[in-house]
Structure formats: C-alpha cells, structure tokens
Image (cartoon, rainbow, N blue to C red):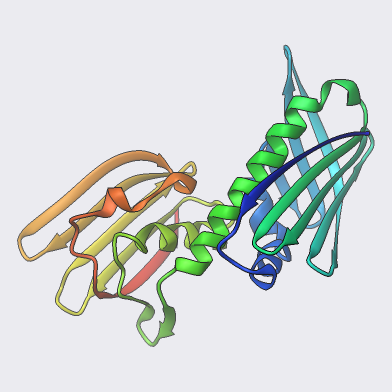
Length: 230
C-alpha cells in the first residue's frame, strides 16, 4: 500500500468539517483528478507518463470521533481517504492499494495536498460567509464586505457542486452586484451604484479568491440576491 499525508490549519472545529464531509457529492468535485460522481459511483482520471489511467469506484463514507473515512473500491484497487482532526489541524491521508501502486507516490501526494487545501478553503468560506437567509423575494445577504465577498462566492460554488452560475444582487439603495463563475473561475464582477459602474473581467479560480479583488467596491450593504445555474 502506498500512503501520503498532508496537514493544514482550519478556522473551524470538527463539527463544521463533518458537515462538509457528510456531503461528498458537493465536496468531491474539488478533489484533484476528479471526473464525476453519480450517487455512490465516483470516477477519477490520474495522468501518468503518456497515459491517463481512468478509475471508477464505489464510495462508502464512515465517521468516528474527530475522524472521517472515504473508502473507494474499484476493479483496479482501493483508495482510502482519511480525515483526522487534532485541535484545529486537519490531516488528510490518501492510501492506494492496487494497480500501479509503486508509481502512485506523487499522485497521492498531490491528492492529499489538494484535498486538504480545498477543505481549508471551504471551511474558511463557511466560517466567514455573510449571513444569508431566505426572504419572500429571494436570498438576503447582509453586510457583504471585500473580506466576506470571496467567502460568499466560494460557499455558493460549493453548494452548487462546482457548477457554472451567475449571482445578481440588488441593495436597498439601488446598488447592483453581478458575478459570473464558469469552469471553476470568477470571470466577471460588476458593481453599479448610481451612474457609476465598476467592472472587473478576471480569470481567477474560485478557491483562490481573496479580498484584494473586491477592495474599493461599495459592497457593505444588504443585497437581495438571485443565483442561477448557467
């Protein structure tokens, strides 16, 4: 068996992480090498040399105290992903027993690291996400700031399982906010207040969004937002 691990610090406790891990259909699309998930059927594609090895698995999920395990069983072997929390430190361990085991060291390292960093981003988004509640006219996001805007976009992206989407918001003073995400990247951001409009055309991966992109924009408001899959 080949095994690699990676550790990250999380801004959240185990209970928050458990919520994320209990919905693999939302979480796994952000794992390295991911191809698709349908129910408990998961596919990965791992590039090795001049080949692309495709792997199809049956997924089972288990929880213990401060620990979760994804076991993926396929006809080429078994992939086990273990998530362990010690305080605020998450340790992700990826183990592979099966075809090409000797050559899977680097892919497993990339796998464990990519999973750990994706989980960290979504835990951060959950912890920092502005208050969003349902209203008769749509979802209301309160007090969006440059620091909180990336968290809101990441949270929506996770909820939609990595699908393309647009988000449009209108504040009480008429300020409008428009966001477009395609292929896992923020493509367009536009904020209009009065007769002034700030438009940013970008190509930034959602998981890499930070406050710098939103600084200087009039976002500290209560927006009623509408989210559409594209």
